[in-house]
Image (cartoon, rainbow, N blue to C red; front, side):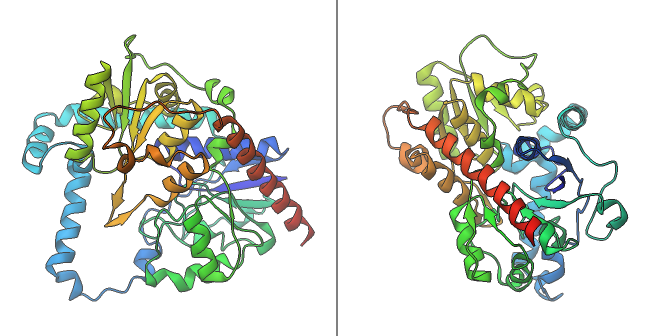
Length: 396
């Protein structure tokens, strides 16, 4: 069968790229051919369509402050820099050419990884442009994984619910809402779109609760696609970066705000263990900022310790059995922690949450004895769900 994959594409995010690769490999394991269909929707998603805001509300101090905060954060990368606004602006001004070069090199690195490892169509789709004659080449369409159903993202549209396809063509592979509670303005359209899937799966327990509330349907909670590939399969594509050190190092990867509390804890542990620190996604370290997804896998694999608020960084820490700590991440005032709690709960590793470890006097080692069995079981469950979904849809 030919399966078209709809997910977050064109993003320079490690988890996004690696889960897309894993989705395609998972369907190949089941004997199918899968291709990514790049989604170029960038604006005009569910938030813009369904969130009704009066012009007056947009003039409120709270709204204007939130917009300004987002714009400043994006321009100066404030949420990932451990600087205050003034120092960040000065740093950005003094290093503008260097930062521009780093951003360009990062984008090129991700594009190269995608061209090498992710088979895709020679056309793209968007909310407003669907070449149906080309899409007719596919037997099924699969949405997920990653936060494809997060309504706070501007690119999340009805396209991510496969509204262009017949019900019998719709598959979903562990998609995520990314947040623990949906805003009211999307509940009605989400209910309609989700109800048209013959079988539903999600990546976290909270997502299953949301679907039950909206549709009355039971959704299977299955693992992220990255866990359907073995450790050896990930080692096969990892790539050693040019800058790697021979000394033991700690890896930090924060998508959200690395607070003073988080930073002090990391500095304390790395100093006690005598570790160098590699900060990913910090543009002040251009050689680290430009790491591609295959190098990211290598860096997690060979780190002594990992500190992160990233779901996929936590996944790879488990796959490679690294000592790690997971920190809460908040976006737009909403915690992104539900999927991490589901992940850690599956592996009986909730004690790796920062809220649990921060009062420890030592950086306790992790017992991974049961992890391999859990991963094997989760892989079998996820692949079994996909195989059964295809079988059921074929019979419709």
